[in-house]
Length: 491
Ligand SMILES: Cc1cc2nc3c(=O)[nH]c(=O)nc-3n(C[C@H](O)[C@H](O)[C@H](O)COP(=O)(O)OP(=O)(O)OC[C@H]3O[C@@H](n4cnc5c(N)ncnc54)[C@H](O)[C@@H]3O)c2cc1C
Image (cartoon, rainbow, N blue to C red; front, side):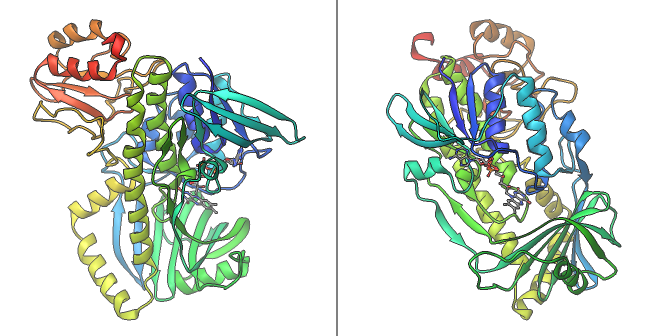
C-alpha cells in the first residue's frame, strides 16, 4: 500500500496521521515549519473531540491529565448576570470544556504519533502537485532546497488557512473578513471574580470581553476593538489589556506577565467541496471562522476523524471507493453550521446600537432562564449534537427507537469505544441471536464485540466514528447495508 501524503502537521494533520496509522495505513506527514506551535491558539478540547480521541494511543487520558476543566460559562451585562451555561449535565463521559493550549494538544498528538512509529518530517514543504484520476504526483522540498518527487494514491491538505493544497486545486475560499480588530492576550490575572473553572463573557456597551481560564492564575483575554485601519491587526500592549479589563470587566482584575499578546481579524471562509478526486481538504484549509464558541480546531480534528476510517477502509480494500463520496457532504454541512453559529455568537456579542444592546440583554435573560435552552446550548457547544442527519451514508431507521441514522451514539462506560482497535469496524448493538448470524459473515466490516441493544427488539449498526449508520428489526436489513459498502467482488 502506498502511503497517504498528509501536508501539514498541525492538530488536524496529526490527528489524521494517527488515525490512519492506527488502522494500518502508511502515511507521510510533512510540515514546512521547523517546530510545533508554541502558542496557546485554540484553547478548548470539547467533549466530542475527547470521545473521538479516546479510541487511539493511550486514549483521552494524556489530554485529561494535561488539561484543566472548565464547567460553566457566565454571561454578564453591566453589573448583573444575564445567564449561566453549566456543562456538567451534558450526556458524555467528558461533561466539561478541557482547557488545553494548542501547543500542548499538538505536543500530545505528536507523542501519540511517535508512539505509533511515525515521525513528522519537519522543514519539508509541498512545493507543487498534479492530481490525476488514479493518484497524485507531488514535489516535496526541504529547507535546503532539495526536491523529492512522490507518487501517492491519496493526499490530504491539512495545511492551514493559507493552504498550498487548496491553492493548487484552485478551490475558491468564499467568505469575508470582518471589519473589526480583535485583541488576544494570554496573561496572568489576579482578582478574577469567578471560580477558576468558569469562563466569563462580559457584554459591554463598547464591545465584548471574554475571559477563559487556561490554568489557575493564567487566562486568555479576548476583546473586540474599533478597526485600526492598518494593514495588519495591531498587537496589544499589556496596558491596553489592562484598560479593557478595567472598562468592560467588573473591576478589580490586574493583568501581568503576558505569555502571548496578539491582534487578529475574523475571517469566515469555506470551500464548497472538501474532496477533489484524490485530494482532500481538512481543518483550516477547508474552513475558517470566528473563534466565538471555540469550535475551529475541534471541527478540523473531527474532519480528520470522519475521513480517516473511510480512507482506511478504501485503502485496505474493504470498501468500495464511493464510501469516500460521503466525506465532503457530511463535513461541509457541519462546517456551514459552525460558520453560521460562530457568526451569530459574534454578532450578538458585538452589537453597537444601545437599543439593540438593551433588547439583547433582556432577551438573553429570558431565553437563558429556560432550562431546555441552556441544555441545548451546552450540548451544541460541547459538540455532542454534531451529526449527519442528511448524510449520504444514512440507511434505514427501522428499529423505530434509539438514535436516528447520522446521530451520535454515546460511548458506553466500561466498553471499548466503537472504532477503537487496529481496523476500522462497524459495531452492532443487538441481542445475541441476530448478531450471531451477522458477525461471522462480515469479518472485515463488523466488530466481533457486539454491544447491548439500544432498545428492545432492534439492531443498530454504528459506524467506526460512533454515528448511527442504520437500524432495523431484521438482520437482513443490516446485511443489505453492509453489502452495499463492501467492494463489489466481496459482496
Ligand atoms: C491567534 C489565533 C487564535 C486562535 N484561537 C482559537 C480558539 O480559541 N479556538 C479555536 O478552536 N481555534 C482557534 N484558532 C484557530 C486554530 O488555531 C486552528 O483552527 C487550528 O490550528 C487548525 O488546525 P490545522 O491543523 O487545520 O491548521 P494549522 O494549525 O494552521 O496547521 C497547518 C500546518 O501546515 C503547515 N503548512 C502550511 N503550508 C505548508 C506546506 N506548503 N507544506 C507543508 N506544511 C505546510 C504549517 O506549518 C502548519 O504547521 C486560533 C488561531 C489563531 C491564529
